[in-house]
Image (spheres, rainbow, N blue to C red):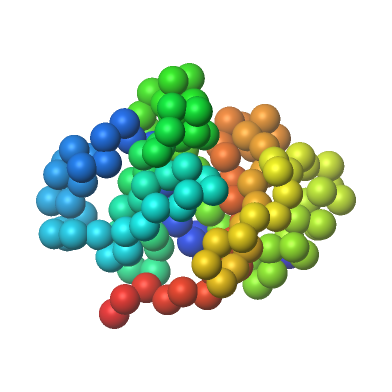
Length: 138
């Protein structure tokens, strides 16, 4: 499997507005490059591009969301590392063939798909493969 890039890194936060105030000066930004709510994933996201890599602040939209559960277990902090691939379905089949566990199968987002490798297989890191072709703003 060919990894094209580090696509994005996610930071789990309790309060997105407060986190934006804390992070934007450090990132040299005054607003997110992309802000969205992903209803199926129960997240509210502020994405900033640092070069070609997305840096995401994520808060849970519900108390039972994965971000809320992560914060409950670990506190706020780095939650996810995402690798860009040509085709997520192919990457998933390859890593499953090597014995890694996939959480929940393929998921749709905008015009792409993503999937998660279970953190028990990756030293506690939630690893994502995504075939998003969105380019960072210039």
